[in-house]
Image 1 (cartoon, rainbow, N blue to C red):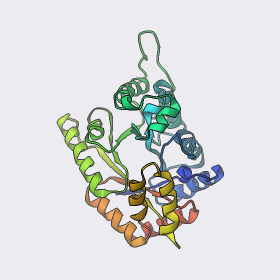
Image 2: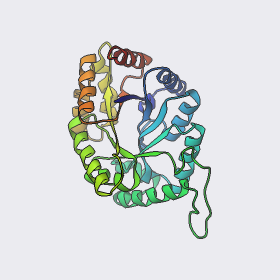
Image 3: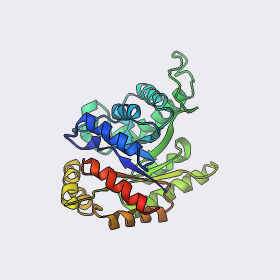
Image 4: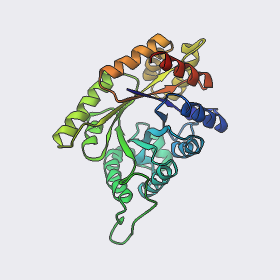
Length: 290
């Protein structure tokens, strides 16, 4: 199982130069991917722009949106932006996509919250058409540039429902499960595999999990604060996630093993403490497991 690491660009107050330092440190380490969370009504960096910066600061590590909230964005511009990023990164973009759960993000962008699932399905069709070089419509021609990979970047569908998992069968290359709960991830992974098989697609979907972590002195307390702030809209969830934060080598190893046991292909670990020491500590921990 591969291990990726999240960019700290989701934590308010983190400076832009530090995000790029973090990307370079991760690129020189054992990590497979750099992940980044998406929100609008929050003091995080916009994911596609942040990953474009990370693309220029790195050479080999993949760039992953974990996940990008597609219905908040105009579709053809999203197709052009992601194709551009994929081309500039030399085909290193993995596009995790979901519909979002915060109604204020939709209000802020003038998007319809209660129709986001239907809009997302339409967006996936348009993205595929644009990336394949087809005309947008009878009146509108192709929209470039061509992404690095024929047909567009790798797509992972994310969410917390069987419907989200079933979308993989038609549009995705795999499924992404967030939340740091291996039991919940296992359920959605199996939904995705069933839908994939029933659609007659060869092989199996790529399965990616996401979880938080913190390491070092007072890690549990220091690492919980950003989580409580980020999930303040859902107090019970904020309490649950922050109180169960893996904050020791032993707990993180157990978490990694739990994801490996359910057939996860890659686990992306988001540090909740914006300190480069987190990159080094996690890299050392992974190195000691070799």
